[in-house]
Image (cartoon, rainbow over all chains, first blue to last red; front, side):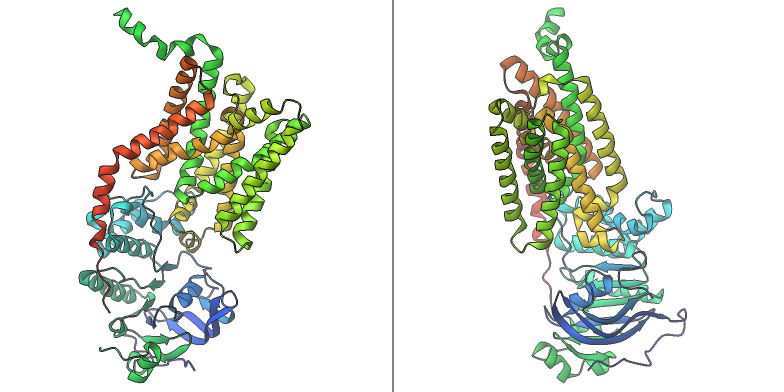
Length: 254
Length: 293
């Protein structure tokens, strides 16, 4: 069903692309319940894979599998040459609805600084370079203005910008983003599009789950999921009306 | 001048002229500091209920130890290990809501503790001692034991601070940051068990939970950072110890219960005081933008 796309369009000014994510005959799901069968793909550095589908279609399950949060049911999958979850410093994952309790005494800045913990381990002190990275990522996601506010005082959109900054602060080579634009206004969506383009330019592979077809336009590859792989390939081919109808049950204007 | 100070004398005289009360203040302050460290993570991670289960789970262990003339601490430690095993198994295996299963487990353990103690000739004295502690009979050896527990609990907090904070935000975040959630969750339970086992002889198993939760929760209401939450929890705990002991001396009240009541009362007081601020904070929440397709 799913075919491996070849001849991806890669701009020439990038570092030599190498394989970052590879899956063959991969079945994903929770426990014994398979959500999607037979996923085959190979992504390279600097590429953007957009996962499209309705709620429960398997987008989040695939991202969690790539993040090493849940084990694959069958088949092979490697991320940066190791099994998923094997390189925490080089892979960063933004879950769909990060838990945010109102009692947590953490400022936005503290949440973003946690993005450096994978590098710092248990004991290493945060250096000036770490603090600069935190400042920079907060600036990029537009979180600077509420940096000193506790999480409990932040709106949903502000929390999302904070969590996104945390994920970027890891400076990973693979970014797994589960609906990063959820709860964001238009300016937030533009900011995320800009961030994704910038990350790709420095050679990062981005996997983005969304149900917004517009997010797929700049993708290297699109995977349409509906508890199975409906289509996989470059956006022009994968997003045919037939495929979109099979994925959503109707065609979206785009 | 002097007469003005004399008016305040009841505030310190009980401690300067009674060694047992001085020891009690020292011991309960140590309990407060130990419980503030462990309690901060318990409150952040929402483990209050597991803390409760642990606090009651140690009772049969203590009861059996006392029955055979073994130090209660050893029995409590064994009880805590069994309880942690039970809680972990339940959380991992049982489909039933873990709240229900943990609740049943600790009621069962409490009942078992009372059954065992009821075989003892001094039943009422024993069970009261286990539940409410013996703050006014603190010895130098007790204080030494407290210091050891403080060092271990503080050591665990220093080593595991980062994973503990990550886990209080999201277990998955800790995992994808390269920390074993299983290991650090276990370590957190060990830390809580240490705090409980190290404190029960003084404030009692029933009240140790109050010292674990109340000062840390009060700190959470006020603090913007985990470090300030922990420090203010220590402060609230020590103040509660002093106020509670003073009240118990002047009005002839149960010492451990007075301390814990003060701690819980302080929480209520601060919670009411901070209502306007929290309302203001939440007022900004409806800013959420609608997700468009």
